[in-house]
Image 1 (cartoon, rainbow, N blue to C red):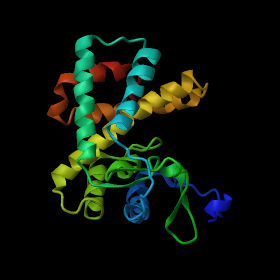
Image 2 (tube, rainbow, N blue to C red; image 1 turned 90 degrees about the vertical axis):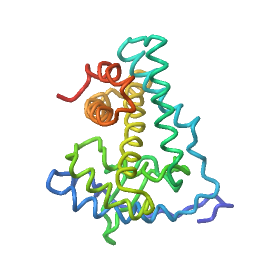
Image 3 (cartoon, one colour; image 1 turned 30 degrees about the horizontal axis):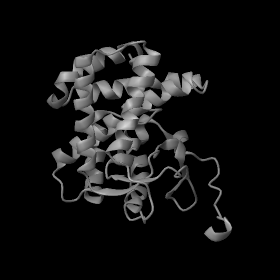
Image 4 (tube, one colour; image 1 turned 180 degrees about the vertical axis):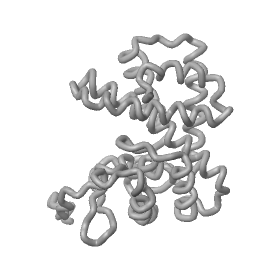
Length: 243
């Protein structure tokens, strides 16, 4: 790399995306492939990276209200509903900020991971990397856009990653952090998919929305901390939930 001259030499990873390998019976094998990459990213130099701070997370969560709820569903939440929503946002943000902060790819999923000769996955699309929560990239892998892994597998992989990403944390606490981080990310994704449809004319992403709606509805029912907003959120997502 010659930063002063604007040159960077990149390796061509080819077309062997891990997406092509997604299958119900290959979950553990694929996770064993990507876990070393997650571990290596923890040690990446984060100097100069933007902070994934409270303002950035809130901006992402606002996409759900602005683009999915209001634009896509034509729903204007009441003042009380917005208050409950904002408490939810604050809970998710506080949990994210309490985590160890590492290099975060932000789009760590099967389309951005390529099988290469070395065996370790080649990683692309890292231009939006930030300094952020330890569980973020793990959550990106666990709640995939093309396949829904069984809950038992999700919990197994959370625990498998814990010694590498949060070794001092108890298992139950780490699982909560992963669930809540995935919750925040999946709400954002639903908003982004709606925005891609209405603003950018990329309607194909709407086909992926039901899976993420189901992810959100599953996690919100696992935590009593979200009881105030649970019924509203499940109702808002019902039109697009995966049956």
